[in-house]
Amino acid sequence: GTLPMFDRIVARAVERELDRRANLNGHGGHALPTGYLPLEVIRGAMLSWVFVPFAGVGVWCELRTLNSTQQEACGAFSLIDTDEEKTKPPRAALIDMRNGQERLARAVLNRPRFEEIETMLLGVDFVAADKRRELEAIKKIDLSSCSAEEKAEIERDTMALELSLAFFLPEDTLDFLTRWALGVNVSDIKKLNRAALLDAAILATNGHDSPHDHISGTFTDRDAADIDKTAWSVYIQDQEEKKGLRNGVNWVFGGGK
Image (tube, rainbow, N blue to C red; front, side, top):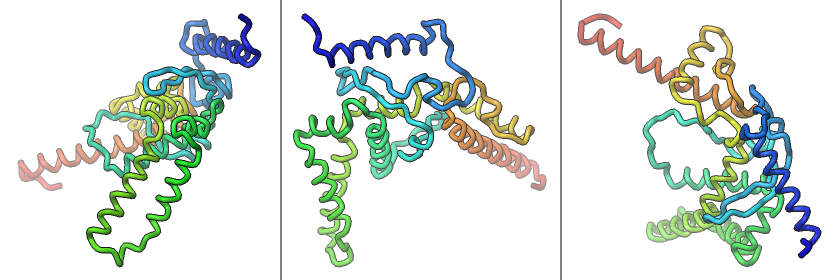
């Protein structure tokens, strides 16, 4: 039968998005632009229909492309993996990360809006608001007059509320929306490794400029600061390791520092 008007609009928008994404992936004869560019320029659109996973089930959503200022307002996220030994983050850090991901999800979801999904998953839109008010009230409690048992109970209640709010959306949804919001699907940022960053930092030291000036590819304007910060960190670690080795050799052979 004939599709309702709204369904036809969505169907056409999805078809256009699929064509555009094929082009972005190199199947339409159009290469991605190189350099450090706003995410909107790389994607060629402010709004895009995207197949978003929700607990393993894909749903078409219209997502908004954020600029670097909007991205940074949601939190500090580094997208670079330097192959260092992974340790499980403290629960508080995990909650902070999830809250940052939630801010990104709120910012990018256009249709449906974040609040609409919240209502669908929680049943009523005031449940999360009640939890946040309860959490704020608990945090205002003066713990100085509480017994150790009472303090432990308050801490348990606080953590339970924070976790329920921080893990509101399915993990695959939060992960996907975070990657979309930060442009991971169109940037070469995840291809960088420790060796490439160290080389870039050494060249920047010699050239009196920035590490990102020595790394080519397709990157968002936000990636430049992430590259510089991580590259300098890797460079400092490398210098300290070399200094430690030199000191160790001097100690063994009786030399001075």
